[in-house]
Image (cartoon, rainbow, N blue to C red; front, side, top):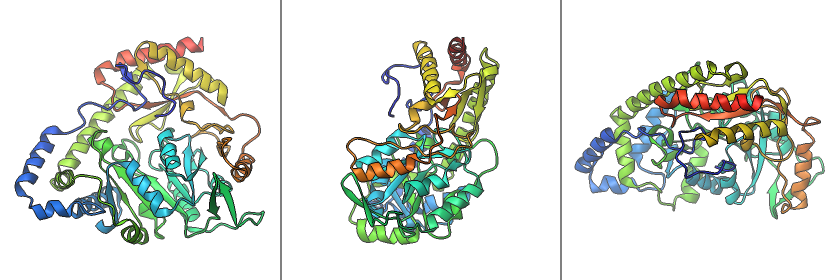
Length: 449
């Protein structure tokens, strides 16, 4: 992950960056039992069938049933594409949708996602958040065609996009956009012609990466369940539920896109082994997967509650605010006694992180997940609707013109926000929580002076 402090190979007492895989996630005994049954029962024909371009029909049927019961989504197995994790699927999406489109990513957001899109040679533009998620005016100003978003649990702020904003995002995806004011039919981005947006090219990629672990509040329906116009591409993986080493992901395409996939990309072989797919299908059919997720949810809920309780009771407790806890596997820890501009807050965060790192606790300052360019207001709290913008010297004049227009939407002066840390707690061991919370609180107090 970009911007993470040095020491990736170090043995940490606690790692809140999410880079360390939690132990005890993968259900070895149940998986081994299921695998033996597959080897004993399945025919050679069934194994060969699982190698089709969209993946095993049996696994796709199991995923469709899971989405129907868990997320309220009515999808046909033929709409599902299986792949070896999110990265390979996003590459396929770029080929499917086109490289002549502008892709938007949330700011602050997941740095690797931006690099994935950039490596596929597409224009990528950061879109800032207000208290309810991606800003609609920002999408229009930046002339985005495809928005990659995490509405159920935004990373890193933890925002859950309310239904009203979800409907607005769907309306944006379904609507057209007028030609640019200068009348240009096209603009140059990194030497590539990018056509003006149209209703036919707008899509939302809904990344539902840890929806299984919502622990507080009422479930919020996914965008895909509200979409009646075929504008939402739903994506998820099994890495949060079965561990980061388990490289199986899937996307649910609108019917028209699924047909286009078969026509244009049907020559690809599925990137997941047939045996893995069939084992996962049976694992889900038997109910073992649902039982495993329920056990993990209980475990993580207990861990989250203990961590927040100990931090709140610590020497820094009066200065801490825990935002968006219970929506998934991370929350935002804000320091309330400090408020400055973006640069001041980022400096404070880095000083605290260095103090904690010396004692074996790896923190993730929120500033590391922000794009460079104009400063945005505090995510999840600011009423300023601003757009982040990154301009690089290698971009052509057309790109700079677009960036200037985007920058004009920023409020005057630097955005003001509190220092905050992204607390990904899934790898935290319960017995270490008192010691870890003590280290974090002492680092905060020391910097507060």
